[in-house]
Length: 274
Ligand SMILES: C[S@@+](CC[C@H](N)C(=O)[O-])C[C@H]1O[C@@H](n2cnc3c(N)ncnc32)[C@H](O)[C@@H]1O
Image 1 (cartoon, rainbow, N blue to C red):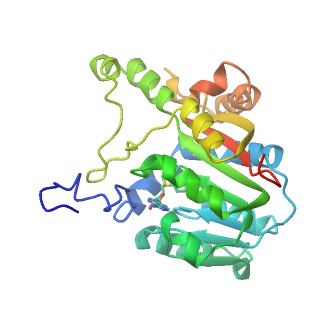
Image 2 (cartoon, rainbow, N blue to C red):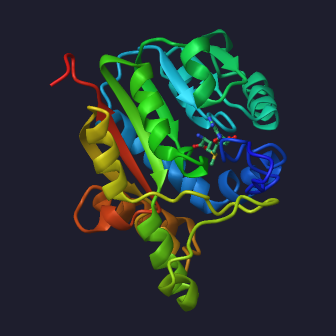
């Protein structure tokens, strides 16, 4: 770094990425122990078998966080390499995986590594890579998609989930943060324990970056197309079930998928460059 450059934030890496060190407990509480995390997992459980061709192939889970997706694949017969740069997150994942007797533990390999570390450490090439809710925490998400593309085998599939910038604007308006929305100051700064992503992403970004890397968009869905905009969150288990049914019904339909809190893509790398 040039001596006159001021670091963007003491919490970000030199590349401008936000590793989740010190955030494992908060992330677990505010997402996975809350209804929105439950819904996200239920939707991924519903969508991934529809959107991916799964045949127990090896999987690379990039930025695996607390390890839910890794566990999901391992339980379905895949060998999974979980890469996560934050020691806190990785230890948390390893601990609960270890405590879950239903998990085939020998199917999981852990690496404390960032996406940028992976080409030398786990070059593959991989026929299936998952990278869920990671790009929005990076200083240069476009470069990250190029890295992911390099790790994919010809014919390989990338399950990519990104935090949707358009949904962030909409939910800010719904919550009354009108000035913030009007000036489009939507991104977080990655400071302290804040969980607003530093690089929220639009569908258009993914369309352009995929094309630039020779990746084809095979499928897209919105995750949580209604839940974040509700005035009255479901109060009973029956209402929760109905909301889940609605999310399933509309997650791949226009225009609803476009305002999903997250956008989930299957990107494939052609067998031979076109
Ligand atoms: C919002 S969490 C998502 C975790 C998990 N994939 C999920 O869907 O629950 C973002 C994760 O990306 C990780 N991360 C940040 N920078 C990264 C990088 N350069 N390479 C790989 N992972 C990174 C963070 O440490 C954090 O665990």
